[in-house]
Length: 194
Image (cartoon, rainbow, N blue to C red; front, side):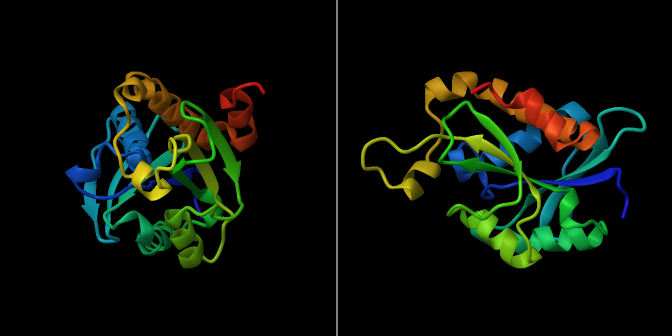
C-alpha cells in the first residue's frame, strides 16, 4: 500500500435536485478541494466520479471520490475504490453531514459507529469496518418537529449559505492537513476550543 495515497470520499446524493441540500455537504467539500488542487472529476468504473491531485509537489496524493449512487448505498463504490487503489480503510477519509454537531462546526475523528447516518452505515457494512477517518460537517438539528430526513434533504438557508464557503474551505484544508501531518495534528488545528 502506498502510504502517501489517500482516498477522500464526499457523501451526498447525485443530481442537481440535491446539490444544495445539507445532506450533500460532503460533495460540496470535495468540489472545494478539487478546485484548490486544480483537479477535474471524471467518471470512474467504480460508480463514482473521481479527481486526483497533490496540494504540494511530493506531498500526499489525494483521490477525491463522489459516489454516483444515492447516499444510502455509498458502500459498494467506496469498497470498490479501496480495492482499485489497493488501499486499507486506514487511508480512507469520509466527509459527511452530522446532525449532532452544530452548524458551522467541524469535527475530525477516526472509527466509531454510524450514528444513524445511512451513508456511513452502508460504508461500514461494505468495507467490514468503521475504522476510517471521518470529517464530520455540523448541520445542526432540525427546528421544531421537522423530521430529520426532511431537514437533511433541504437546502441550506440563506444565512447558512453566507458562511458556508468558509466552512467548506476549513474542511478542505483539514483534509489536506490530515494527509500531510496526521489526524491528531489536524484535530489540534481545526477543532474549536471547548
